[in-house]
Image (cartoon, rainbow, N blue to C red; front, top):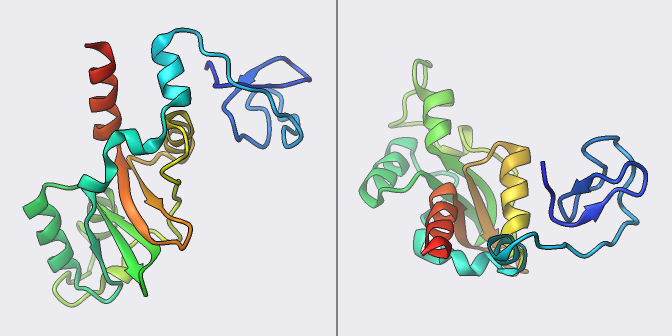
Length: 176
């Protein structure tokens, strides 16, 4: 895997910026500060462009932890979104995704009409800042197996969600 600029001083592997250990040899990278070296124009955009370029605020649906799962799913269906951010006192505390519906609800003895979303949400939610690079969020998604990553401001309030679809749309626009 080609990384985005943290060259391991031990084995020379090109890790993603922000990694704490080398993916190949597990060498400590916390003291390494190597700027990414773009390999082509597309790579340069992914490294340099911030998450805000993905237009994530247009894809935000939020709810409270006590909202019923059935209501949350209905909102997701109406807005055609695969992720809801869960906020308590205007702070991001979790996410509820279409994957949570499949893995935590389907075939389980759970009644979505009475179950609060807090019972099935993923918490704490991994998040990024709107100023983080697209490469950073891609790395977070890859390592965590996420298809959705919330964006939070300095106060912990969700301002958007980056989805795989956002990234595909961004990449397609870069090609044209």
